[in-house]
Structure formats: structure tokens, C-alpha cells
Length: 445
Image 1: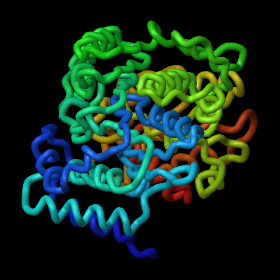
Image 2: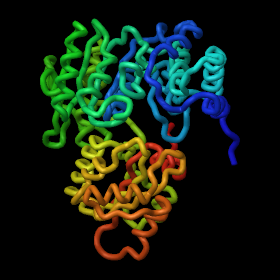
Image 3: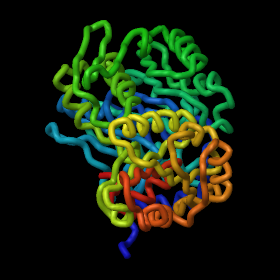
């Protein structure tokens, strides 16, 4: 068994002492940053991204385009899939791509944040956000990509006073206990990252109520607001990705990340970079959208123990989306796959008890042949497989609990004969996806 990393030992100390959940305030993180000499005020230009779905992909496209420009980019995202280091990507030098923070550097930054906080009340997320600011302030970069953890207005990342640009991706119901039970309320919380005089980019929205709130709040900043469908546009045509804004039309290859929804996320990244003054060329945009990677979101795994268990020729896909909006875009992508190559679809799902499973599963009604619900080994907040199967059946799907992902794949694949091999989608939780990636030896790098 491998010894735990230095950083994981330090973070375990945090988990033992401080709450793991969210307590949406800014006074604790502001106090801690003050004790650390305010590293959040010593950053490269910041692109601050909020949203319910798509913010991670938008950050991934932005990073890839900036690196195609030869820019050094720091990236903070959450949660991680397999390892804490994934939350912190430090800029490369001399035009090289960035890399996940080294173990010693992360452990040292965590220890410093912990010492500076002393015995004061704080959450683990706030401490780890302070770590991001420490790392990013002390290593050179040309840009910082900062993903909101939860909400926006009172998220620990929202202490940056003057970002280069703020962007909000698609909004749907999620984290209702913290953000409100209507998309308008959630949109207002996300719009809390908007700052006076800072350009605002609003990505594709399926909820008109959310869009109106974002536009209204954006207008109050006094800065330019660029809205998808009004100020910039994107669509797929004849196998190409077409982007258009006031500067003209770009005819590009389709994004590397699969799914129709990624066209909107790539467009949001392009609009945000242009609004923030980064001015990528057409060739740099093209290279970037072809290089972007975002693990755990419609990711196909083609090797490892699960592939060996599955019937020959099967496809195994992973997606950590866990709310109704995510269910819709993933189901749409699976429908496109079905149009190209027809296969029976089986869902293998685990979900946390803070989510709304019926709305997620409804997107797959009429598509999935069967749902297997499984426990999430890495979290004690998972819905029981029995209860989750009941939710899937309430959504109109055939469902039953299984003891594990492996057991579900084995059950389908045993004696499979005739017709196209199955298509499996392992879904419903980033924790579940992280467990699968770890077991498959595919931890993000």
C-alpha cells in the first residue's frame, strides 16, 4: 500500500478539526487572507467563473486556449475526482503547459494556512481556497482561472475585488438548501460575482427567469454585458463549430470535449477571453478547443478492470453530472451517440443525499433499458441504492439496486449474446466517477 502524500496528511488534519460543508460568509476567509498578507490581491488577471453546469468545461476551454497562446495559467477548480492536488494547477514556464501542484508545495501551503488560521472558526473549503490564493500569488502566471465552489455571492473565491472578467454558465436547480428553490434565486447568487466595472459574460441559459436576473444584475455593474444568443452565438453546421460576435465569424473544428452542450461552453470561454482583454487569434482558439480536457464529464474509459468485465465491444462512459440540468445535456449527448451507433443503454448511478434524483433520471426516460443503483464508497452522504432505485422508477425507468459498479457490469455482460454490445453510463456523482477513475488507474494529471 502506498504511503499517504504529504498534502493528504495535512488536509486530513483540516478534516479532523474543521467542518467539511459550506457556511456561506466571507468574513472568515477575509480574516485568514489578511493573516497571510492578502495573497488574493497579488494575482495575475483573474477570470472568475460561476454556474450550475458547464463551469468546469468552460474553465478547461479557457485554459487550453490561453496555453495555446503561450500564456502561463493558474487554475483552481473543485471538487477533485481522485486527489486533492487536482484543485490546484500551476502555470508552466517558457510556454509549457501547466501542471498539478507538487506534493511538497501543496503540503507547505496547507500548513501555512492552518497555522495562520489558528483556532478561529473556518470551513475546510475556505482554508483550501486560501491555499489556492497563496500558491497563485507566489508563482508567476499570466492569468488565473478561478472556479466558484458554491453559489457566488458568498463563495470563498469571491474575495477577488477586480477580476479581468466574470462569466456565468448554465443555471439550473442544485444546492437548493443553500441557494434557494427557484432558478431566479440561484441566478441572483451566481450573479454575486459580478463587480462594478468588470465585463460580464453570460453563457447559454435554458431558464428564461435565470437569464433575466443575470442580465439585470450584469447591467448594474456599469460594464459591458455579453449574452449568449444576443451578443455572441455558436452552433454546429456541417460538422464544424461556428462562433460569431461583433468581431466577425469563426469557422472552427468541433470541440474535443463530446456533447452538443460543449459548443455553448466553448463559446462562453471565447467570449470571456475576448471580453477580458486576452485577444486570442483564430488559430489559437482552434488549437485550444482541440486540446481541452475535462476528466469525468462524458469521459470514455477504454482500459482497466471495468472494460475487462464488460461484454466485448461495450462502451463505458463516465459523467459526474448530478442535477436535472446536467441530466438533460448528458441524455442529449447519449441520444446523439445512439443516432450514430445504436446500442442498448444501461445506467449505473450513485448519488449524494443533497441531490434531486427524480429530475435527473427523468431525462433518460425512454432511452435507458435499465438502471442499476450503487453505493458511493468514498462518501458517507450517499443515497442508499434501494432508495435511489425507487427514485429512478418514479421517473419512469426500470431500476434495481446493485452492490457495486462491477457487479452491475457483470450482471449485464454475463452471457451477452447477439446484437450490439451495451453502452454503460456511470453517472450521478463526481464521487462515484472519482472512485471509478481511481480503480481504473486513470487519475487526472
